Length: 333
Image 1 (cartoon, rainbow, N blue to C red):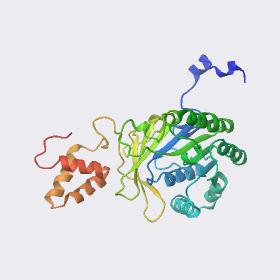
Image 2 (cartoon, rainbow, N blue to C red; image 1 turned 60 degrees about the horizontal axis):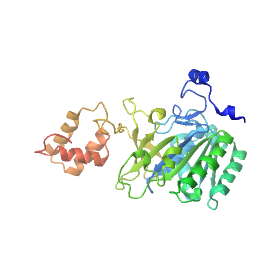
Image 3 (cartoon, rainbow, N blue to C red; image 1 turned 135 degrees about the vertical axis):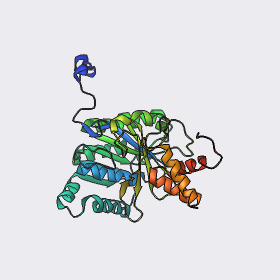
């Protein structure tokens, strides 16, 4: 490659249609070939199961909980933590929910999905293995779960992290013209700050990955997970139950099977005065539901549950609304 090949042509840029290219794998340019995305969340929230079902959906070209999958993709999933029982439970739950006895879809899943467990290689040794796997499976997307198992350096050493992501792993993705999804952990004891910076380690994690999905959950609720797009929200094109653009949805994993479903009442964006309330639910309706519950002698916990279920709030949000609507309260914060 000549140095001149690295420069962009201004006329070509003026003709280019952003986020309209055939290399888009998810959404409208959220994940593209040679591009990357990160799924981040605390331990136990369901990152691996969420990622696996996203991988299965991409292999079949099926949308996943409102995430637009643009075409059937050859998927290479490399993981380090789940044992065969976990993986079998996950794929059986997906097939039961989304495929059933359709032999054609099962055949396509078999052809397009390649999964491997790697637990003894890190750093350049790992990326060399990824390169060999890509030569064998010819993937459209490579998924790595979790990134910390393979990076092989101090996560706050920005130089080492940059070398691994941009040079070692990034060069493999570019060479094979595939997309990259990495699963990563949030900082322990995270107490806020910009949502895009919740990934454990230095700023390179939020800088390198083009799109970021942030998973959070209430430890008191079984597998109730909030998925928030904290980087490239517009490109993922999530919509709420009214068809309005949103950057956050609620999903639930079944208690008896690994099956993800999207809650009918999904959260809206955190931005603006609505702070998570669906745009077309008037405040008077929420207040009326709370008042009716109190008039009927229901306890606070029961009222909170009904408000959460009816209007799509988390229990924490619903609890705040119920407290604000208590007799004697003036206005809402």
